[in-house]
Image 1 (cartoon, rainbow over the protein chains, first blue to last red):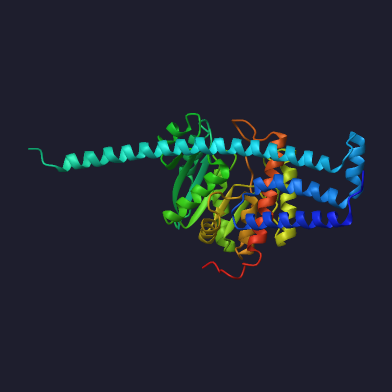
Image 2 (spheres, rainbow over the protein chains, first blue to last red; image 1 turned 90 degrees about the vertical axis):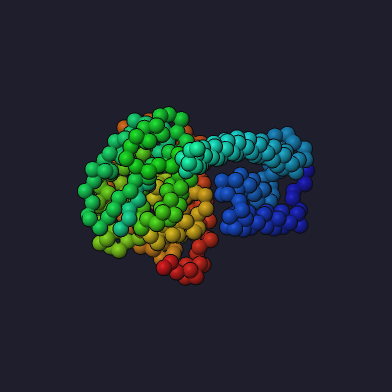
Amino acid sequence: MQSLSLNIQLLSITGVLGFILLLVRLIMKGKLREEYAIVWIFCAAIFLLFSVWRDGLEQISLFMGVYYPPSLIFLFGFFAIIIFLVHLSIVVSKLQSQIKILTREIAFLKYQLDQKRNAEISSETPTP
Amino acid sequence: MRLLVIIPCFNEQHNIKKVVEELHRLKLPPCYSLSVLVINDASTDQTISIVKTLPCNYLDVPVNLGIWGAVQAGFVFAQRYHYDAVVRVDGDGQHPVEQIPILLKHSAQHQADVVIGSRFIEHNGYQSTFWRRLGIFFLSKLAKTLTGHVITDTTSGFRFFGHKAIALVNEHFKDEYPEAAADVLFVLMGLKVVEVPVQMHARTEGRSFFTLWQALFFMAKLSLSLIFVYLRFKNKQYAKPVS
């Protein structure tokens, strides 16, 4: 078990900060809603924590009986991504349902408009 | 002055009639002409059928927008149909309709663009639950740190908005009106925001809003949107004067 090398540490920190910057830009441009960024910000914070606290990862791995500390990061990242994907699937399902409802409502509105138009036309046409 | 009172509501079949009737009994100064808009946010109860019998305009939203989306709908309506001012009253009966003239009076007196009816200046009337007050306090401090402007009741929906505020909301918020963050926008764009003490009623019917997780998530969302509104508009404050 080795402690995190300085190079990797710097790379991680730069990477995470760059990622956070990307998120911030996306939110400010209105392309990403804040609530979806919360999860990523949380993950980035954890990543940053262990990039800085080099011994922390080692200690936790030791405590959990994990031989190769970085595999904890992989595990955590893997679960975070899976959970987030499931959450997104739920969001998409809800959106799909809402779009279908809206589409149906538009169809009903068109029906009502057509009825009104037909009623107007038939009241304008002189009866033979 | 054409005044639009917007009433966003979700499942308020027991309260909505009372709110609308109270609004029509209001004695306003003759310079104001009052219109009422109920925004039925896809209620699952009898709200909309009751609203259709009431003397008011209404928007029957087909899919639930949430309170922020419903309020935004009210602002869009106000702009599209050329209203000069908006007052928001929630459909649950918590907001004191009879104190609307107080908001109007302060808006005229102080030339204010936004008047917030605050529960916490004089601590009269219903003070909300402890956790909500804690959250509101936190947001208040956050807003103050960023803008230097003090607002004690950041999530109070009971407010008056002048035409400048209506224009800003329509321009910068496309789908939702973000509660506390909008105040940051108003302050950064140079609008005059004042707070006046009002007494709110307790919820007479219906269930309380949040589980702990929902509340935490909501606080995180509010805080983030507050911070990001600040970041977006911090440098634009003198770029686009609101005429």
